Image 1 (cartoon, rainbow, N blue to C red):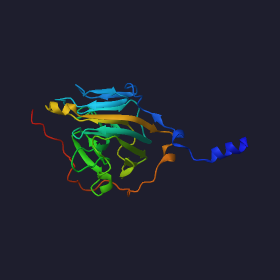
Image 2: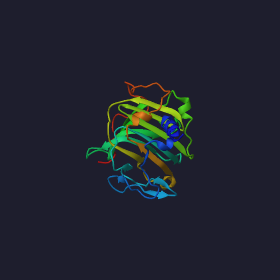
Image 3: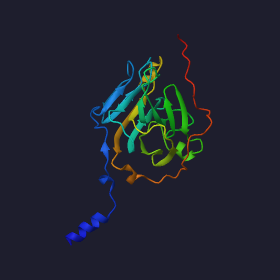
Image 4: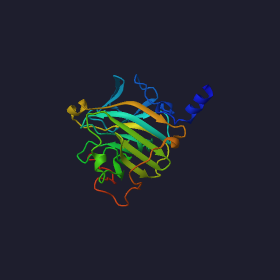
Length: 248
């Protein structure tokens, strides 16, 4: 009987608790994370077991809360909650930018979209003060409706080779094929802010951040969206040239 029970257990598929998840955030401090900014970084604290990010007025550039470790292929899951006026995103495989760049990190960004277009879960190439949407949600009504500001949302991201898949609350939002970035940090972005003190009350909270790096392809999920590359021509929301500073 004992041999039979062992055989039955070995035959069952692995339960979620048995998957090789590694926690990236202990809910107490920023062990394993670093703040990336040129000067005067925006504040990041731990409150009630969550990583809480805020904007700071008159910041010269974006602030990032980034992993110390770099990742290539992985599956990432987390929960997040944000205010509608908080401008942020999740950077994947991001790399250190050149010394004269407008920001410190470049990489794929899974956008947490605070605009009316509601493209949360889409991906663009975040290259400082230029960007290009690689996979948007213009033709994905279910994806646009999957995220609600102010409510906790579950995010699942698979980065396996050149393929990036994203789900928001279980709804597929991205199935991108692209080879630009193959390894780098995971990071959360705090957008720079001008002299708008009222905006400093907005927050992005993150919790239950975990990752699979041990042969993650074993746990990849089917994706309902068609796989596609970025459009060949720029879109309405792309910015391909840097902003020109008004000051010398």
